[in-house]
Length: 278
Image (tube, rainbow, N blue to C red; front, side, top):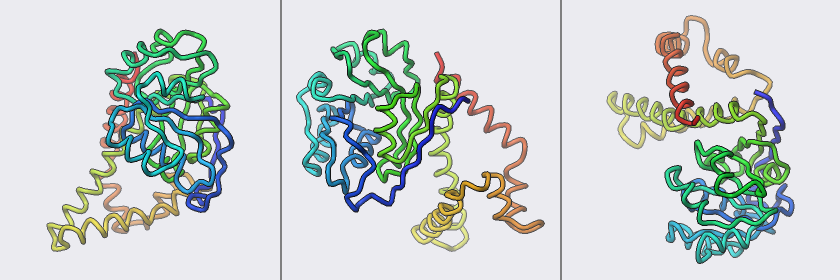
């Protein structure tokens, strides 16, 4: 992977009114689901000067709640009004309707269109928008809500980096293949949570009931956050640092996370990647 840029943002400014988000102009969101809501919260919560945000009327209840929460947020009549009012437009709709939504829009020259739609290529977007629109693909994660999520983008763009730097950081890549691989890894997030759930269920079966089991597992893994912030050590080094030779930690890791399981994970990621590529 060729890394064109990676920027880190200190999330400690959240809630204090401080911000590294410079003037980026109005931001419009077409599609107001979980990721779009997280972006709005990240842009607006605790900021002295939040940018104007325009929302499509899709998912009306969520859009109305965001507009009621933040003075800088407005719900538009339709998607075209979002485009007309915004310097940067973020497309965050289901993949099966994305092209249809784009075909109905007139996007003027000078707009930045950020596609957060999995598997939607530049070529597919440009067939609908034309060549005059700057198109950037992005993978915002739910943690942009806390301004802690690094967002991968392709291709590198200064305006997109400025936007996502203010939401936790930007990883800009200049190869579509690398971007697709990053997107494939995001599919592992619910599997990680299911793994934690399985541990809690096992704990429940051994007498630590329901909420207590889940609360303990949440606390145990939340405690790893500090270790993950230590960029001086690789992930494999961190794993070794959390076990002792012949200890119980090593016993479980070596017995459960075998080479066979590791290869199966890689093969499954390959299958996910194949779905993302045309």
